[in-house]
Length: 258
Ligand code: ADP
Ligand code: AMP
Image (cartoon, rainbow, N blue to C red):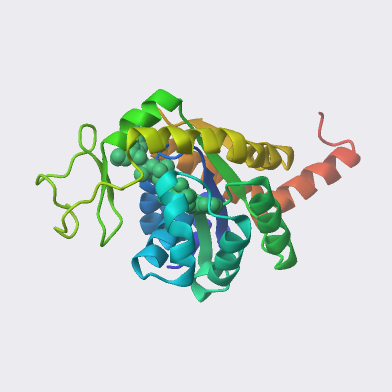
């Protein structure tokens, strides 16, 4: 099944493609949650960080422009990111719904995303903010390790692989990202506070923002994320629309008390 089956949630037979943004500081757990949601709901997981690292690895023109900015913990310019994303959002897998991770990261990116999806008549359903304090982020990222082949993420203390240094899923040697050192982590945090917080406020003003406490254990965060997803599905379901219509109509007939 390629889209979320609303029958489980609303009792209707309609399938719905969910369009979700996971937003929060680096290290809040966006990738960790996205990999679970991708598998469980069949959503495309679109991580601009992963896409850029692939461009760097392939030494493309974009990769060569992005490399030093990424190593320094600075944002890659909006025009480059928006070009990359406009191509990605035209891929066929996007039609079944997607999870954006690490994008948008500036107000200009947020506005461009909302405008593009509006033109495509495919608006976002929800923006889920993973909230976490800076010192916990430094602890998490300093000990993060990731699998270069499948992207699975570990933490050496709280979420270690079964065999030291090797991915549980495919046995590949785990890597320590170049930008996961304390100095660059602190730069990335300050970039987050200066440039990404405004886009969070932008989404709040659109009524799309749902915030959760990302310091909770992974399974608990997952439970909260799924609760927000279910709420977004119900809000956008045909049943919910007809329910609202019926209630409004009954109220207007004076048959339902407020
Ligand atoms: P992001 O994608 O937001 O940068 P990651 O998903 O890569 O963050 O997670 C950063 C680090 O924190 C990883 O080492 C991961 O194993 C760990 N982590 C993720 N979620 C939690 C959590 N809820 N509690 C403790 N550690 C977590
Ligand atoms: P991430 O994997 O999300 O932590 O991103 C790693 C790095 O890639 C960031 O520190 C930025 O340099 C760059 N990057 C990722 N996504 C974006 C984006 N949406 N806008 C600008 N730069 C980005």
